[in-house]
Amino acid sequence: MSEFDLIARYFSRPTQRADVALGVGDDAAVLDMSDDRELVAAVDTIVEGVHFPVDCAPEDIGYRALAVNLSDIAAMGAEPRWMTLALTLPRADESWIARFAAGLYELADKHGVALVGGDTCKGPLVISVQILGSVERAHWLARNRAVVGDGVYVSGVPGEAAAGLALFQSRAARDANAEHLIQRFLRPEPRIALGRGLRGIASAAMDVSDGVVADLGKLCAASRCGARIDADSLPKSSAMEALFASDQCRDFALSGGDDYELLFTVPAAKEGELASHSGSILCTRIGEIVAGGGVECFSQGRKLTLARTGFDHFGDGV
Ligand code: ADP
Ligand code: MG
Image 1 (tube, helix red, strand yellow):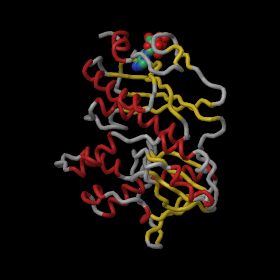
Image 2: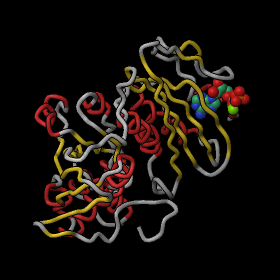
Image 3: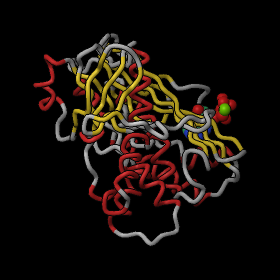
Image 4: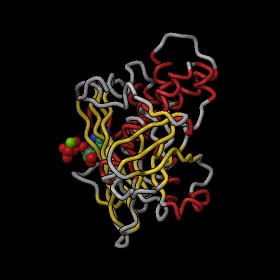
């Protein structure tokens, strides 16, 4: 199969969106922007053996390639609209590509995202999705507006994805708890609706890809403040507790990556309104923003020293 057959067969689906003036097939896509909105753009690359294990199913890789990008759009409080796909493949394995496309389109359809262009070439398996979305003018969320006294919140149950990855990579037999955790790693749920709901209530927001403590550290650095979190307040995962010792569970929850939950801050005066903005998504208050810098973690009043805080591609010993 040639590169052009492959694009025609798998990546040229007619789009459902009326705002795609010109999609796949020309030199570039032409997209309708409305005047009252700002364009929100992000790109994320996933590399085999780095961001997902070599034995992942192609459907899961396709899903995940888009999920991690949608999560960035969620963190901005924006609405996803279009994506482009840069695909580097070791070979034109048609059944692999069909399954990859199925996983990608499954999530794209759920969020109304149209594939409008891309690039296809040969090489080690690397997938880059560029996501384009929009947000009401000046109503986007950012990392740099947290203020001393704001409450710190996280959505979902952080740590489950990291526990799932550990289980996926082990050869141990899998029970229902293990399957639940592995799904949390393979199929993170981008928090688009929550991000939209947080506009006008959250002071700052970001998504958790590298771990709660590490990512909160980035939010604090951007906002020029610090944070204190209570490790005991993080939501508990019964699946994780059934399979791992409590120290390990805490390490996953504080320092495990890949959850793609939202981490956000809410001014004290608005904390009462959060429930009406967060829909059915569990949001847990885990601490508060303080003066200074860095993130301190406490358990039963005692400060914790963390062995690691999160993932860093070029760091060592994180
Ligand atoms: P060009 O040489 O102009 O870059 P290409 O031959 O690379 O064009 O691509 C042809 C068309 O197919 C372009 O519209 C491009 O956006 C689209 N395309 C290429 N690869 C993909 C892909 N993996 N997914 C979606 N569209 C793609
Ligand atoms: Mg090209």
